[in-house]
Amino acid sequence: MPTLGIDLGGTFARAAVVDGKGAILASAKVALLDRKPPGVVETIAQAAEEAVKKAGVKVEGCGVGAAGQIHKDTGVISVAPNLGWRDVPLAALLTKRMGFEVKVVNDLSAAAWGELHAGAGRGAQDMLVVFVGSGVGSAIIADGRLVHGGGGVAGELGHIKVVPGGRLCGCGEHGCLEAYAGGHNLIAQTKELLASGASRVLEQLTQDDPDTITPVTLETAADAGDAKAKEIHDRASHFLAVAVANYVTVLNPSRLVLGGGVLTHCPGIKRQVLDGVQQWSSRVSREGLLIADAELGDDSGIIGAALLVK
Ligand SMILES: [Zn+2]
Image (cartoon, rainbow, N blue to C red; front, side, top):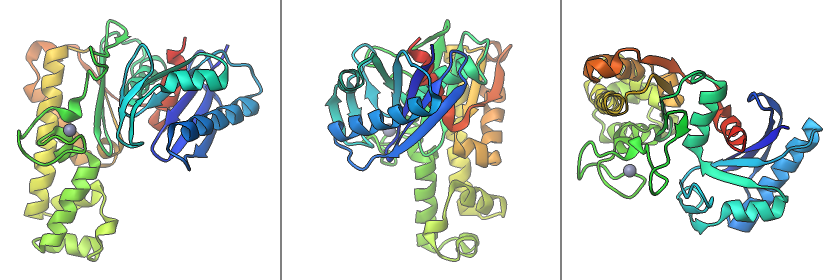
């Protein structure tokens, strides 16, 4: 029987009815107007009901992928910064509202599970997924299972320290990889450079409007020979490359799946990451390593959440 997958973001809840092979039968998207737990539960239920109605089938369970620190057995969200939540028993609240079992997992875990079963990870038993989008996220599959860690936060590659005491990260700590290489922070560093008046290239590219800046703007300025932009771009790429190479050395995956907006739209950053893995991961760990692009795009989390219920 099909299951429901939910992608709980900061602004929308997306729901999809997914069959056992990971194909989406129908989907629905509802805006989160109220971010308090009862409002979010209602919004998720609404999106789910709409998707089920469109699909015209019965479903037997529901998986939710949400950003944050989540207890794998209880589905309690300990911390969800984008919703401002602490200790919310989302799985229990949704199970009560929807009348069947609801499982809640971290969004990256859901995405990795989706890629493993219906995307770029098919056939792999040991896999690392690294997504560089607005943040830097990753998940670990070992022996065909998701690695959660004791506190449910294993695989937080974005929060390894690359410059102890360095730039402030969204997690509240200083010097994390994400503070240098996550999309939000690439934009922030590019805005700082534009504001400093030290980059004529950026001034021309943006026509002095900081709101037009994306990570692609930074890469374009770096490629155009702007030394300061290149410094930010190459520092981020270098930190990412060393981190991913070491990650491969430590965990020895057979598959490395790369995705997220920054890696998709900034080929220069991606090239440095790929080169880094070839140069700096240990020789034995890269023998037999297959590197693939994520295949499911924005649907990886929703498909993975649905398949996790099985
Ligand atoms: Zn951090």
